[in-house]
Length: 228
Image 1 (cartoon, rainbow, N blue to C red):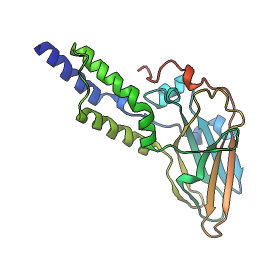
Image 2: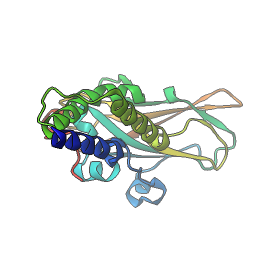
Image 3: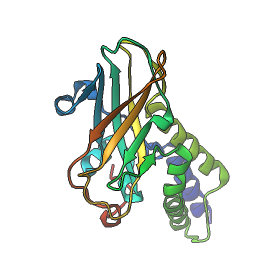
């Protein structure tokens, strides 16, 4: 019995301290990405660069799991007010993933992402603890779960794109996350749409970035957990 208890607490400590609780490890710097620069969009002096993350090797680099497996598409977005003469404003409603029908898919909140991944992750932790203690009925306690969610939220907020004013020369860059269909296998015809508002004239500046390329659909991806 003592051996089982020791294994239980060892596993708890491992899970609490492990890096697999961080959803985002880091994000790419598109200002130094030659490929992203080659396909940048420039409208009225405002630069837009976009990088969709869906390849398994990139998932391992930037995240602690394969988010596409859960129907979540991470998209790195870089916006620079390079030479537009006035300040523009970006809010969370100003970035959307547009599908083939023209329907808008807004940015997912951290809570929405947690809702999509927590069921499988929670089950995996409970199963691991049950195995370690030879007790399949053991489930993780509230402390373990709350610590997990705190780290998850921190990594989401620290690596997500920042909203607000973009003065001349100003830059904002970071991840956005979108809900995608489980059978999506082709990004051709989809696009990222950015709406900025001129603070002085109140006019909208709409910038679209066309996506392309094949993607392994969520339902065909083998696992949501990246290998360390």
